[in-house]
Length: 155
Image 1: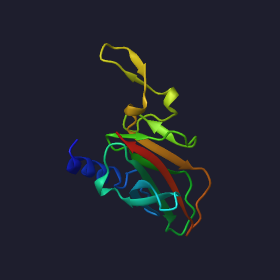
Image 2: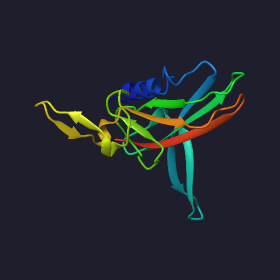
Image 3: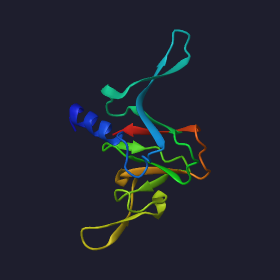
Image 4: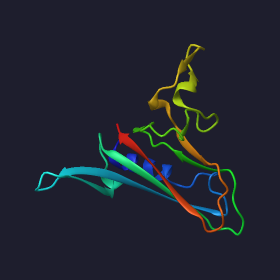
């Protein structure tokens, strides 16, 4: 994918998602590229930079900040993000729920299946992931905020 189209896809993926953008909940999404270098003393340095020039093999870090700006507690918050095409999500977070069908069904990757062209089914693979979701089990009091983050690699 060309750089401009890839960047557009990433920006669209970071736009607020319908069901997760409740009126009382404010979501702010950010995306960074993690650059790793060695300083003059041989120590490894990790720096987060703007993701406007991400390329193949780059490590992306997605950050979602949420805040209850309403006057009542919010229960059952689900934060959902579309997975940008051309990225491979780090699946190490056990709280992360995955979808391979645009958000219609959720689960762990080992539990997800897709239809094949010949009428059968196959296990989903990481490249099939279309969306990720986290649920906040506790009630979120007015003024309360939180953050979640996850990683992906540009393919």
